[in-house]
Amino acid sequence: MKSIALAHVPTKGAFPRFSEENLHLNAVRFSSLPEFAEWKEANSAWVTDCDREDQAALVPGETSFAVPGYCAICGGTTEFVVTSDYGRLNKLGELTPNWREHMICPGCHLNNRMRAALHLAIQNFNMAPDSQIYITEQFGPLYRWLRGHFSNVQGSEYLLPGKPSGTRRFGINHQDVHALSLPTASLDFLLSFEVLEHVPEPVAAFESFATVLRPGGRLIMTVPFTLNKYETTVRAVMHSDGSIEHLMPIELHGNPTDPKNGSLCFRHFGWDTFERLTDAGFTAAEAYIYHDRELGYLGGLQMLISAVKA
Image 1 (cartoon, rainbow, N blue to C red):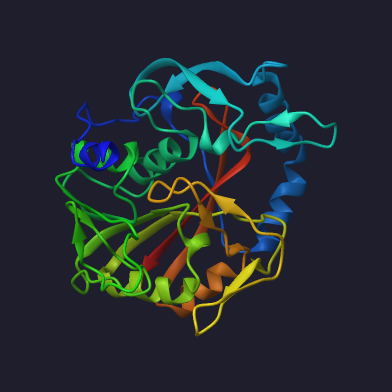
Image 2 (spheres, rainbow, N blue to C red):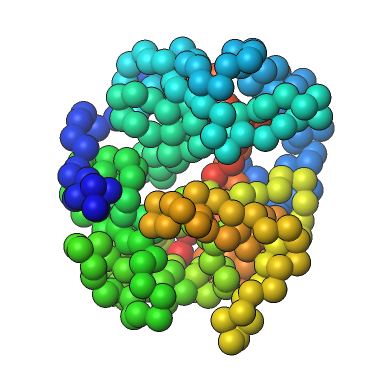
């Protein structure tokens, strides 16, 4: 109940500006695997340096530590918090943090991927305080931050299987991304972060997203993505009777609406995702790849996907 109550409390603060050169997040755009592979080969030294910066930030033997840096969202120096939660063992048997889910700023309470998504959305895509925004989450610090800095924000959670989209419970908006109940062509931005890997039919979700976005509106999303692979890796499928067939070992991710059981990961996306977006009614589908030690965007080559409603 506490998380439900907090979901309705906006996080206030100054709107971030990235006019200073040291606050600009450099991101390289790609629309295909061959394009990315060519760039990666030509920039292998920089890619290696990214991995070295990640290693340099580690505190050996510690399961919780802080990394000094600058939060572009808060606009000040900070110490990003890292724990071993969701970490993995590397080839040497050492625990490597899940950088994307950590590097949490104590000021805005946003982790690595959340801060970077906002950074690029405002800096590159001109997401303005009066933009019409929908985000596929309603629990947690990101939704609260958006509510405190943008005047037209809607969010939702998947709460009630079998219930129609738009049903509300305790003030929380239930939406099935396969069939959103939002008005057609009503949004400037649709944000979806670490959600679509848990959706049985992502193409249906893409089509639903395209329906509610205005022409020229933008989808911004992050998902588990295999940078060196074209085909999406399907880990599980849901059949028409609702049964689930596991094609690979079960992978569960954290889920704020069901923290005990988590959420099944159906797939890790590949570059074929951009073709699926085009088929669903999007254009200019691109990957934005970045890494910045000072701004706290660690974890090798980080990635965000953007596509524009045709």
